[in-house]
Image (cartoon, rainbow, N blue to C red; front, side, top):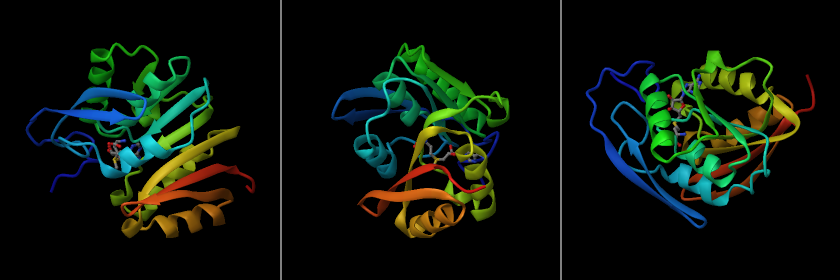
Length: 200
Ligand SMILES: C[S@@+](CC[C@H](N)C(=O)[O-])C[C@H]1O[C@@H](n2cnc3c(N)ncnc32)[C@H](O)[C@@H]1O
């Protein structure tokens, strides 16, 4: 069975264009089979893009689990002074994000495999629609790895479906020492605001 988080999707390609319309921007990007949310913008992603607090003017930003790139593309366009890094385990997703950035003439977005990001980089902002379906153990390992690389004044904004465990994820993050607040709730999704860990 194939999943959107496969590293090398075997499912045949079937590219489709998706239009993103936000209060401050509109753009098209290409999606494909074997990558999350083929042919449409995910409802949770749209919620994050419209309702997350304004990003800082500049700094280093991470799109954790970029898929075809809607979050990274929107962030790079909104903050051309920032350095945006988009990572994904799925190589078709990485290729799509890079192609979409080129097509939109975005020059401040880097696409990378997770293991290829320089260990010394710290993030002023992480935006993510995380891959809940990979299972709790893998999800938690991934979140700890990247949330522990928030700069001291950084923040992460995560969008998580309520019926996929947003409230228990919020409790787990808090228990791990990350001050985590619910910023909003819409259409069955929660927007979580996560601050750097205050306890080891
Ligand atoms: C829910 S999708 C969101 C995709 C995209 N950001 C969007 O909003 O349309 C989560 C993404 O995380 C990726 N992913 C899964 N495990 C990962 C990991 N360990 N590190 C980075 N990305 C991962 C999946 O391949 C998938 O593309």
